[in-house]
Length: 378
Image 1 (spheres, rainbow, N blue to C red):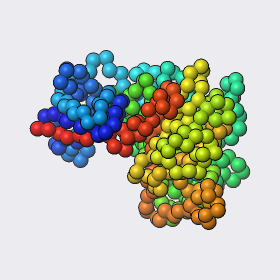
Image 2: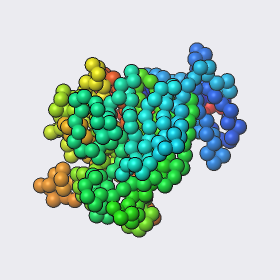
Image 3: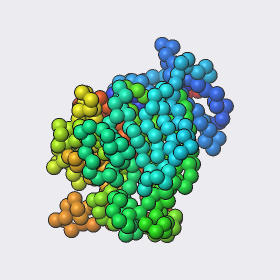
Image 4: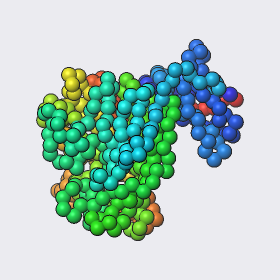
């Protein structure tokens, strides 16, 4: 049995790929082998009588066709993504044996977050404050901006964005999955959003998939808001980000960084509140230039999302703040999740070296929304 890959009109590099094979007899597959004998690690999961095979496609050009055969021998010296419970309210994520991030889910903080967030060449690309206050040159504004996080400021009237008096909390309930592997690692957690007095208002299920890449970083985030305790009213406010990043201070747009979107808009003035399929925020860190791209998926609510992105370093996807973004139109971005229903969001965070062009963000985006076609060939 072989897997056939057919590229569309794009160049795909380091592209996460998935193939499904009927039956469970392929549970011991460990690698894909191409015509030249090159072996690529794969990761196998059993899902309802089907076998899911996942790998990272190194490179395939426009219109190119590749075939892989399935192989049971693992790729030698492959170190993947390892997720460890530190037993102190944190999961630690390593890629190829090196720290990438930690998922903080304990009650020491109002909301869960990922910190640090370490890019290529072991360079942290998000702000350290408020987890650390000893980093020279860092801004100490907005202490609720914790690296990479999920938050929103108008949930049934509760502020679950800031840490002003009366703010709400997002509390960890359980992990539905914590998986390590040669190709990816996954954290899927269920959380409850509460008012300041602990009254539950909704739940979220968030899933972070961290891919085994070192020259760049890719993290896929799938977030579902769930009306688990009745209707949930999400009010129109700019104070929120369904996925939120506070970039390293040296990357800030007012310190030499740049904000670019999928339409070519540049600077905060051209990006704030505008819809775009992706936004890239790049700038200098430790003597080199790095960028963080957040990509929105067509399955997300109100795709393409609008962006709460600022020169001072905040970078967030917020599709709700229509009366703030374009007040002259008289629109409102309010939305109600009915009891028992869900609201779905899906994003890819891509960390790269160089500016937007060097990061090849447009082609990377098509790897997210329109990867090569996969066929299983008998």
